[in-house]
Length: 118
Image 1 (spheres, rainbow, N blue to C red):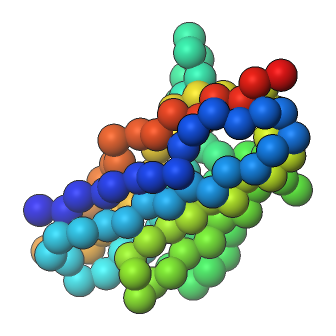
Image 2: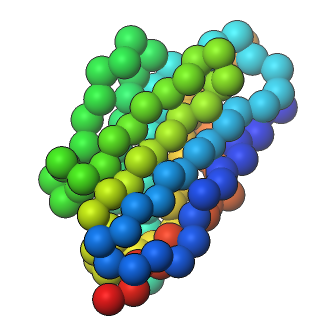
């Protein structure tokens, strides 16, 4: 089985920074795409950022220039550096990975709360 464990959420003032981490554990061959999503209260889950196995990145329009996604393949970990945080960045952040075992499948973390106060 594969598990994704997130860490790094918390409470921060507007303008501050946080760094989220998500590590995959278990038995698998490789990890393809890694992504971060978020869900604010009463809203749908939205894509925040993604990174391919080759290192190509993409970002949601609302976080471009403020957030940076990166990965450490040796540690099976994806990071999300969040700078210049705004109250509208508040929500539960979920990591998602496409993990190849006998086939490629989607796995999700349990979510970590990020709260930005004004």
